[in-house]
Image (cartoon, rainbow, N blue to C red; front, side, top):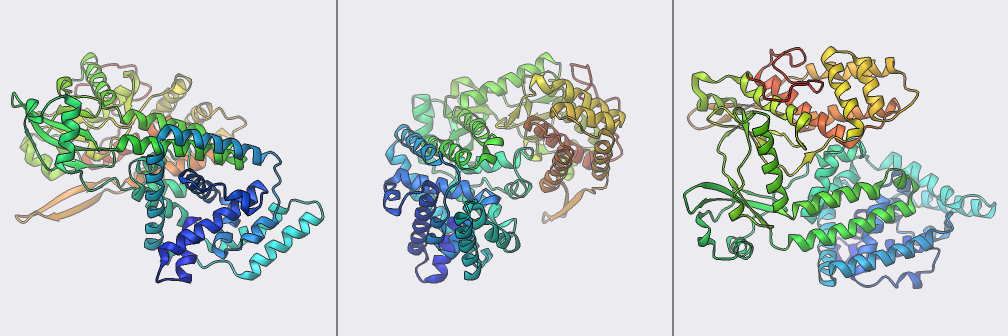
Length: 593
């Protein structure tokens, strides 16, 4: 909505797009609030502090996500607020619910702090304008006046006859929007804005990309491309955080500490260092100010979720507030690096108890050099599983690609079966082959847990895949989704087609000139994995089955390993090879490969 309004303003006065963008934003939001609350424009102007700016953005984000309210988007482009106000609201108690939400927003602002709210509001407006300017050539032209006039006339006629004026007003604009607004435009706008807004929204984008069972396919595809690369924080700022957390000068804990980070993301960055005894470590440090930023944004999202459910019953059915609550819990956990340290130690203890330490590992945590905002871990130097040339160089003639694959695959599968959680982000950057032959699992920022209520169904699904019993797989998914009256034979045929499509995918080979020769790297296409998962979700929903998010996480990791198999052991059949642990397997220890 903001994009369309600001785009119209920029077209009206291209020499000064930023002020006119805010003017259009103001005009549209004032009109929409008046429309929703059945109030005149004077009473709507009570929303004039930094908090109301947040409410206006809530309004825009909530409605633009609804395909069914495309008429509001087109009205923003046409800038016809009078026509919007002419259509009455069909839900009598909506005004009361919005007043309740305003009270919640006030509470969130009070808890977050006025300074954080005001600062975030300015950042949000800047992100909107920058996104608009970047994508202005992609924005469609506004609807013609004749379409707006038809909508206003239809609303007036419906009101006179006692019908639903809002629905009548929306119909011609929806029809215009379906024909003229590209499906991928709004996901792209949201993704670009998320990247510019930073930590919270980058994580939100990653959450969307990892949850195809919860979000529409266009948004999942687009957010798969979310970038979490940001300019690093200065060494002086990082030093202040480390010294404040560890209670002394940086030299008191570390013999050396690299000024340049090896990785910088929206929430934290990682530096190489050495402890006083010479141990090489990786130090993860939260970015200064990220705490207040996340808390302000999470409070905003809490209100946004409730707002969306208040004005759109379809959002309530999708449990948007519950999804955002899960996101809030996950992200607040990331602010406490002690919890990530505990996850690493839990996984290490599980490796020990399962007898897997000979084939896999994870970074050791150094608690004396760690705190809430600082995590010091063992530095593991290895090679990505997809870099065959580097693997052959490291291992020489003894390189066994199948053994490396099986060590990673079996460790992960066994963790699903018997650990407290499983690693839910096993892309190539988080799996390293080490010089001693073991596989290292890195970055436990995203983990999954299988709820007891669906565990038996997952075990049955695993057994059915191994037996190539697709009707049995369909029955397991039906049980998992608590569905009824499903044609198992037809569903099974659909599933068989999806599994067959996996075998048709050929590995992608990237060639790179190293100066002394050409290096070949086999690539795993994340977008391709997402497409397969979306296809599974789509056909499940077409058969009346709604899959839980946990299953989606599991399947995505399994698809990663399917790709690794094609790269490292193309002749191995993981469904029949006795060396491979399956979900229906009763083995609880490492498999010697």
